[in-house]
Image 1 (cartoon, rainbow, N blue to C red):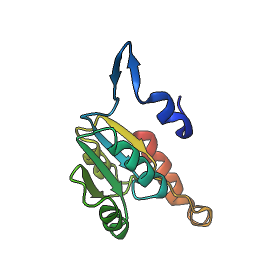
Image 2: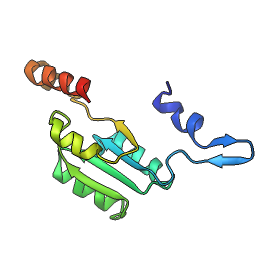
Image 3: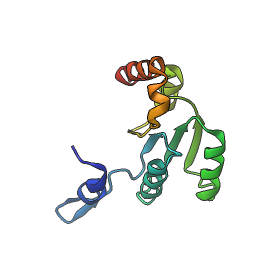
Length: 129
């Protein structure tokens, strides 16, 4: 398994003799939690690889609008409002996708600690996907 820090160095590009293979060229990608700091950085790197579409799946409208402006309304970006705890919305976002980058998280410890029910629901949903 490749970790985040070494992913680009080890996986892209892949060399097959003299031929260089770009892993994500012409592919449809999904980034859950795509408007977060890691999601934005990953999106910037993925765009360099020539995908046909990158779906940004996140809960925040404002963050999506800000990211759309940041990436100058790149036509390859498709912003989708949704929560990974909503199985139907997640299945729809995954339809036709070649690769999924799962970066969505409840990362504020106090929010998670004070809401154990939400955390257990999320864990169940992630296992099912």
